[in-house]
Length: 275
Image (cartoon, rainbow, N blue to C red; front, side, top):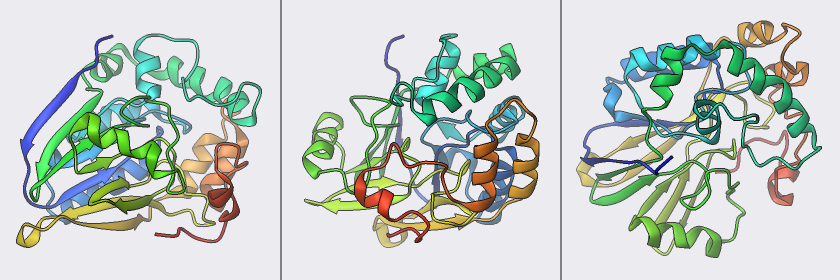
């Protein structure tokens, strides 16, 4: 499928950035309430992809997202689902625990999504570009070059830098890795708002998002935590069809394994997020 880019031109006012809903309906409901409380319009709410994932309510989550009217790009999961592919395309190492788990949750998600939801996923672009507070912003999933590339705060800048040149951007908003972070270098910003569908391996069930503010025409961002009904999410996942380890993570805030993490991020497990 051809790469689709959505250009939103200039955006002003508060924005809400988030990623990885992962079929977590309760987290999406809570985030939508935050947007409404902060009076952030749906078109100023942008997801970095993977609306569908590990949790128990893929169909309900896609339908709520569609009803809300927020923006999103495709994650690797959406790309695979709408192509009726056999796996999630997460780029997990073959035979790893994450790979084994994906052979449970991905077919489950496939089996639950309606044609209406799949049609909606087919409308999502690969990238979103916009201007905010005099900065050019591009939204990608993993990276501009690879939707499944894991980019972390500790990832060398020389790996991040080409993304800014290719997109002609001052700010890259990215997802996929599951951890919130910001990396400022050479007047450029790599900003990952984190995901709302799973905790950030910090020992806390709360999840993460970002608020942008353009007061005085300055690009301001604030990482925020979201409290939601995680106990219900975990209970719904205990259906015998999804990995029990993921339902446990929802409650404990600790990942089952750190296979995808570089040494620095792996060593921070359970110690809180370093921003």
